[in-house]
Every structure is written in C-alpha cells, then in structure tokens.
View (tube, rainbow, N blue to C red):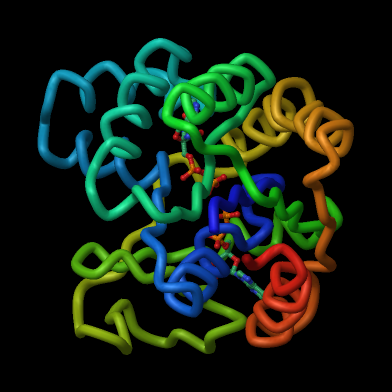
Length: 216
Ligand code: ADP
Ligand code: ADP
C-alpha cells in the first residue's frame, strides 16, 4: 500500500500516521520528523532546513525531494509506505509521480484529513512531542499535567514553529501551496476525504475504512 496523508498543520497527520502505518505494517515517512532529526543532529541539511522551518516556510523542493528519494530507496519502503507531510505542493507531487513511475510504482491512495481552522489552532497550541520516542501528545486532550512521555518517560517539548505567529504563517502557506494538492489528487482519482474531528481512535477507524477498498 502506497499512501499519502494531506491536511493542514495540526490536522492530526502525525498522530494518525503512527496508527495507520502500524496497522498496515508499512514504514511511516514524515518529512517534518526527518528535518527535525537533522536539526537536532546539527547536519548541513538541518542547518539549511532550520532557517525555513523557523519561519514556517517550506524547505526548497530540491532539498526535500532529494531527501525523500533517498528514503524511498531504502529496502523497507519497497513494498509500501505512508508519506506524512510530503508532497506539500504540486511540483513535489509531480516529481513524486515521475519518481515512482521510474521504479514501476504508483500511489494507491491519498487521504485528506479534514478539520476546521479553529480546531487546528487549538490542536497546535497544545501540541507536545516526546524528545525520545517522537510520540505526539496534547496538553488538554491527553490531560498532560507533567512534561513526561507516558509511553517512554522521555521529556516532552513544544515545537518552536508551534508559536502563534509562525502557526498563522504556516496556515497561509498551507492554503496557498498545499491545498491545491487536494484537487490535483482528486483529478487523479485517488483522493478520499476523512472527517478528522472527534477522538483519535474514531479518526483512525474512519481512515482504515477508507483505506480498505484500496487494499490489494
Ligand atoms: P505539521 O505536522 O505541523 O504539518 P511538519 O512536521 O510536517 O508540520 O513540517 C514542519 C516543517 O518542516 C514545515 O513547516 C516545513 O518547513 C518543513 N517541511 C516538512 N515537510 C516538507 C515538505 N514536503 N516540503 C517542504 N518543507 C517541508
Ligand atoms: P499534524 O501532523 O497534522 O501537524 P499532529 O498529529 O501533530 O498533527 O496533531 C496536532 C495536535 O493535535 C497534537 O497535539 C495531537 O495530540 C492533537 N490531536 C491529533 N488528533 C487529535 C484528535 N482526533 N483529537 C484531539 N487532538 C488531536
């Protein structure tokens, strides 16, 4: 199964990606996570990406695409993958399509996680991430009173780009650059919208129901 998740920042892509990828036994490939790992590791890629991420802008396509090409070439991604956060504009989508075509592959399905703006802002304002295992939490919805990950005991942190100013800009970037992907994939006939409101488990169930008809 070759799957893409799209949706605004805070829609729950990372949260759902954890469960969907595990249900389908495919690797979850989150470009945001790979960039953040490079930033913490102090690599050249991380230094470059950080300047864009701090502003809430997209990292340039050449850099992002090269990184995704490398990751998709790894052995665990040959029989399927779940992309979270890529593609993020039509140019990336076109290159992804050509890249997969060269390898005799194609996307099976693009799931759009649908939530309104107010909910997105509420979700981003309370987002916390585990510095150790990467699990995503929410201060209010997960009733997090301490800054410790309930899964591994690691310290939770708030992402720099989840500050109000940056969030507003990321939502604009989404509307201008990423939202056009919805009609791009609808035209390709592989887009399915999923209502991403309500409890996490219910959203996962809806996503799995949407995926089932596309499974080989
Ligand atoms: P969110 O989960 O809130 O949507 P991500 O973790 O996916 O955010 O991305 C964080 C940042 O990493 C983005 O604001 C952008 O700077 C960079 N980024 C992630 N994926 C891409 C991509 N496909 N193209 C360009 N930049 C990206
Ligand atoms: P994205 O990857 O799309 O930016 P995340 O998966 O990081 O979104 O989720 C953003 C925030 O919203 C996190 O704090 C997460 O715990 C919370 N969240 C995700 N799904 C739900 C849900 N169904 N209900 C309430 N909060 C959620």
